[in-house]
Every structure is written in C-alpha cells, then in structure tokens.
Image (cartoon, rainbow, N blue to C red; front, side, top):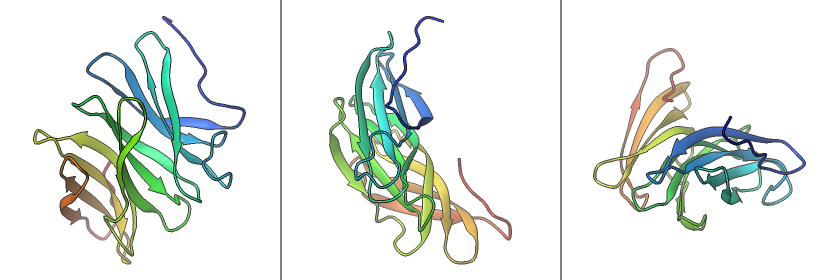
Length: 171
C-alpha cells in the first residue's frame, strides 16, 4: 500500500466510479450522507485526489432527494464530467454536470428525458470534445438501454434507445 486516506464525514459515503486524469490524479463520484446539500437525503459526492493521496477538493451536488453520482470522466481541459441520478429511489432523472479543475460547476443539465425515468451510468469524452453517456430509460413499457451524445457544453446532439421485451441498461 502506497497510501491510504479516509475521505468523507460521520455518515455514509460511497464511491461508485473512479477515473484517472492525464496528470495522474484520480477523480471519483458516488454519494454522501454527511455533506448532503439540503439535509434531506443523500447528495452526489465528487472529488479529486492527487497521485500521492492528497485531497484537492470534495464537493456535494444534488437536489432534494436521494441523489448519486454514477459515472465520471476526466476531461481534456482538466475538468470533470459526472453522470448523476437525481431522486434515484423515486422518479429518477438523468443529470449531467461539468466541473472545472477546482470543483466549480461549469454547466449542468437534466432535461434529456423529460417525463420519463432515466439514469445515466457511464460517460466518456468523445474525440470532438463532446460526451457520450449510456444508461437506462423507462418510457412506460419497461427499462431500455439508451445512448446519449452531447456537445462539449452538454447540449444534446442525439439520443438512441435500444432494447427488447426484457429490461435493458447500458453500463
């Protein structure tokens, strides 16, 4: 073991996804009950840890319900993009947020699937600087796999839904 640190507070925190930056640091996301934004349920937990284990920042994001970060990618400009499930145990919504290198939110969107339950799991940065997200959507007939493509500012370019008679999801 090269280093070991505890990040978080007095309540439960889970890291769900981890990625490496071009500088060798680590970005992570998941949820926190210690640093909930509104004091009502879990919030998204996002952080940056240097290669030596030093915590650069840890931020909590989210709304009024049980929120969780599912996927994360370090971006070419030194920032982070995270896929978020808002109200994960209710009418879940896909939320995509871009943070800068110090943890400040640059942009955030959650209007990708209005009226439907949707949850994004994985995210990558594409060669054109935009992002591709996989996840699941329930349009009333069961869960289907979806693939979402955005530009570099998070604006939806296109979305495809795949699946059959069984439940499907993209991780």
